[in-house]
Image (cartoon, rainbow, N blue to C red):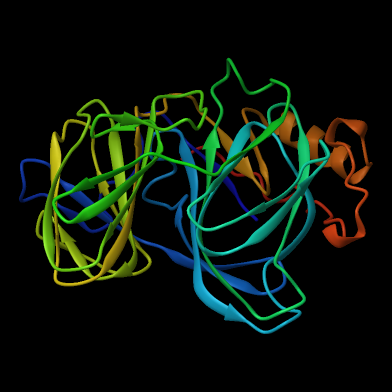
Length: 319
């Protein structure tokens, strides 16, 4: 639970920045966080160094982890406003239930996209009958002011475009790359790529110079323009870079996200993305009072409804 301000042009550059290249690379160390009933994840965005990468304002890497029967990812009903939640499932499966009545299991190599807009609630639960595996990337996308009050929505994307290039299988999760475009609907210029290789190889990946990018490793070992990628670390590339060279000595999986720099100031608190303290306070009060704006999830499998934390005492000035 946190409150962060994103101030235009005031991201910090002193965190592990490699300034020797024409195109500087900033190394951002993630932190371990816990969600649901004890699932530990690596959280790389937001951080003190970067609040956003494009409109991506949240990046968690969960797993790979094995669960005994009865355990797993169990996050009870909770609300969202002002964002899209984005789940890329690599291994395992998770059941999504929401206040619009959607009940969708996401399987490997699928994307779940939930648009919170003015307000929605959902729950995420792992299969409980048998032992299970989980490996996923979960992200949030800040909705621009023009779309942050739209009606909520949910979509499952079972098929995404894949391109084979220089020994890599590149899945285009969001946006366009290598001549193909993802069907996933977003409201800002964005990019998301899953990059998987089975053997040692080198990939020269073209980038949109108008985008900033973040690259993290999900499995294996690799370098990016000579910088070693380590688990739980994000390499941030400022806008202006035309390409990145990725080298691997064996099997590897990476996640690249990017987008046009997001120029709107946002506040991220608990599960909300807003613009003012008053907006966040109202959302907290509405959720705790069971206001109809967030709907209800009537299925008992969704688990126990979460209670929003108090905002009082946590408000900080912009920095």
